[in-house]
Length: 87
Image (cartoon, rainbow, N blue to C red):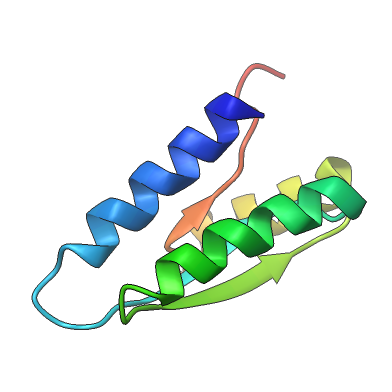
């Protein structure tokens, strides 16, 4: 979880340092109780920088993976996403 939190925080930091406010769509499958609470904290910290976190949670990695691939290949990628490339 620490690694996940670091990666999302790093993404938020990079986006937050731009000259104007950023709307960042973040697609992930952290939807269970503790996961959702952790994502909410990261989103709140991102929003506190004047940017906007657009949460695009999809329950279950097996459900999210094809949606993510379709969006990327279709030329409509999200700003950040959770992906397990080792499968």
